[in-house]
Length: 236
Ligand code: AMP
Image (tube, rainbow, N blue to C red; front, side, top):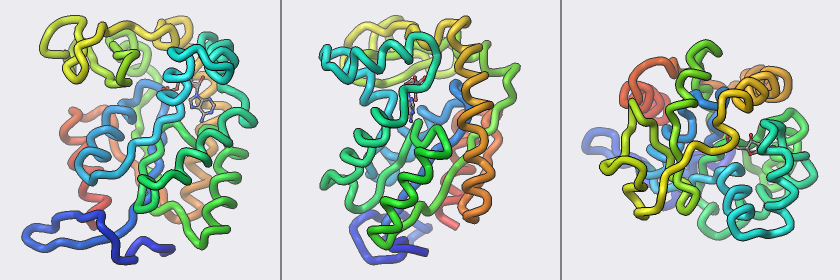
């Protein structure tokens, strides 16, 4: 199983027992399935970087970079940013020092070619993905959920008006900046994103199932229950 049981600093607690291993996790799921929230909670719990390609693009948009301007054209329509732009930023990010001992990918890969590039890069390092966690939510729940989402464009934190409200309405708990409904969470864009998800991203479920690393959790359950089932999988 790759380097999963190599002895490094990432520590999980099994009752009183501690076990150390590198963990590379992918979060899969439709837009709005709650994978971003779960990703953040897992990353916090296990002290591994939460690598979100969506957040990287949004940071670039905010800073007015060329990459940001290019990505925005696609994001605002609910389309995927082309693989040529996406793959390089992801591989550069996971090559950084803080990812040496594991990371959690949220929003990458989103296409089979992206998964293949990642697989090849990891194989070259004698490594592999440990778990692909699929947060499963039927389409009918998604549109309703996404209209309640609010995001902080400064620090990337996400909230839900009903399920995870900020302490003060419209204000980010973490950095105090304004919360907004992202352009790509608007209902018309969400329908496009769902269509794109089914066509381009859903095939990844089979891809990781064939690799034996797919685990599916019921994303319609309350947030804490979903989190507990993911922890159970990771600590098995
Ligand atoms: P997210 O925050 O993960 O929902 O991503 C927001 C938007 O960023 C997506 O709808 C895409 O337009 C773009 N994006 C994020 N990650 C990827 C990726 N791996 N491949 C292509 N486009 C992406």
